[in-house]
Image 1: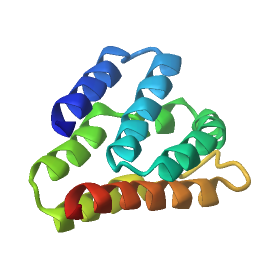
Image 2: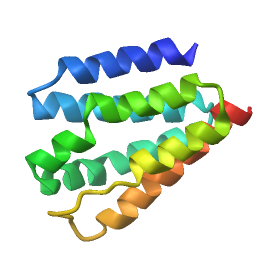
Image 3: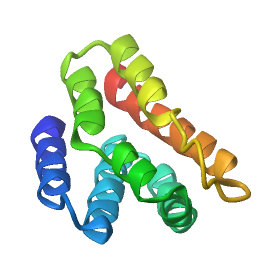
Length: 131
């Protein structure tokens, strides 16, 4: 079942608190799991291609913004929405959560990276919730 796996990934993110490198890895793993759960291997490969630019965007966002974006509470919102079993709630929460890009320190093209991230997570959630 997906929810226990996502909870384990979320627990890893919480355990990494204080280590930015570990938090980045846990954050990326959480979102990769969402893509993998969709059963769409093309989506997983696309996600893996994005991890480099996402790492750069996180780095240039600055520590405060990066920590906010990778917070456990922010990811818990996604997990709760998926757990609700309501596809509309899950998609809405995903858009709200993922579409809050860094407000400073953005790198050229990071807007496109965030947009692609949101789109990839939407595809994954659509597959998870609608089958």
